[in-house]
Length: 260
Image (cartoon, rainbow, N blue to C red):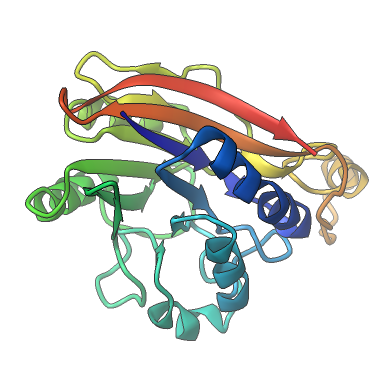
């Protein structure tokens, strides 16, 4: 059995510190073979920097994925090509900097990882996430034993459809972006472990990782204002998946939350 931990969007310094402090202990306790995390909100809740990416990878994350906030920190466009262990959404234009997938290795097993952006209620103009997934799976199949696919999207229907579309072709399909964990973790009929949204790894005493009052005030008066990252009730949120090498399918998925 291969044991894989997948963590939802790391939000700001509270999420980073929680991961850096606890992940080495969790890897030892649970004997994870792979750890994947979405890092697109790791820098002050918006984007990521090369320095932060290196800190997260050094803490025990094997592969970092990104989303629609990938380029919020301007220098990151220049940094990403110098970083290992991180991939940007695969359905951006081919000339966009960064890798469109990763290949990770453990126990003689090679795992391909990629993420795509959804197109419903999302800002970036990107290629079809379904067709992009077809392309990535075809390219990765000769090189890996297992594929893990992320869809960073707003619409639950788009995520669920994506999960069924890849059932049996990807070992794990998970959603991110909304920062709210969904209660639909299951192994689909052809052996793909699926969840619509992992939730976030960050401060839950707020609104999607931001301080409550500025967000409430914006709803009340519609005046733009800063939304500082919240501080309280910090959690790591995600899933643990067991993948059977002999059967070539996921056999279990467990939703997990760790509080500080």
